[in-house]
Length: 465
Image 1 (tube, rainbow, N blue to C red):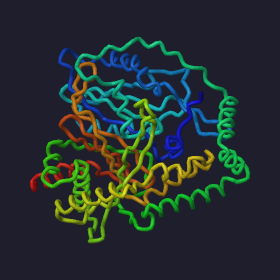
Image 2: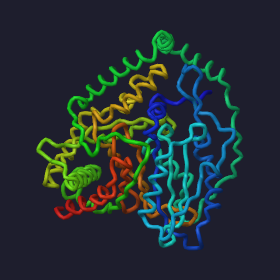
Image 3: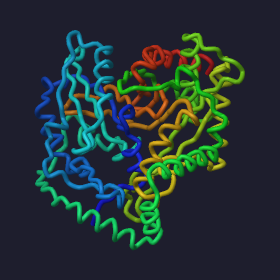
Image 4: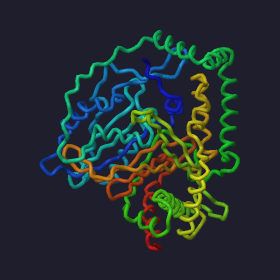
């Protein structure tokens, strides 16, 4: 049975290009173990033994000859753990700034399509004996919540690593190109509309297909009430290159909850208010004019991954999103919070989320070549219908450990869309809320300033609660 990528998962592959690396991940810092130095070699070996818990991590993507079907997952017969788990070290004294510089360089590198689409970096040499782990996993494998599945390999609930059964994995034979083409043809025969689409593709050149898909994308965006109304915000919407910067801000979960308790809504509403306040301060620091009409439109993804019927197993990438106008021109932080709370409530009641599946794949039965064009165009048009991505994913409420070392922080990594200078990811962990900022290196040289304003934006809300 061929394990074919879903249309949405494949879209993340198709949307990737030279200046848009489509991987998600995390930057995690750890305290040194209490019973001796951290052993990177033992940790690497432990990851290798636990890969049976996440079989996808030993599979690679194969394209179907002639574009007759969506790509498939196949076992990698040459799987090389040493390629995927790498070691690095910071120069003394191992400051946070040096870690952020390294993370920016790591995020700029696209994952190797000829191998399983993930990497883990063990970064030694942080001050006070700490170390960091940086993960990269292609968005085609996981969405924001599923990306936590790497924790099944890396982390434990106690300082003592849990027992891991011996893994006797043997890769399944890799299918030939002929077998992949035959499987795609058989699937098309079972779905007549696919046959018509494939036949139609043979009569349509790429230029015409691009035009048709472009019009479809524009129609979808118009239906999302966004393409015609959103205005670019110059520091946030800019031509981007290959290189990246990364910023981090750590805050207290208790303070977010205190604001929520005092003023209603959800913790996510408070997070959006904090992001809005930080963006407002940052725009002012750059001398950007803020008028009554100034707004920053955020795309706020929501995971709606279904479970397979009766099994309790999650059924892959399924994401919707809200488009929310962040009132950065409003001076009163409580008014900003109220506006966002009301906007999110309206979205929830209406159920009119913007389907990322619709935006990215257009139609699930589109021929893969047209599908690829559509995903690329949707990515390029993203600056036309939102200014910044803000994704908030709940993380583990209990402390986690790596070979006896307690994890201190967990900062998410989210990719940049076309024309987006920064993307903001938020993850809660134990008693903290951690903000991660992925930014274009040239378009946003002051991402550290933006990250620094997060604490100030939260503090002003707490002071009024």
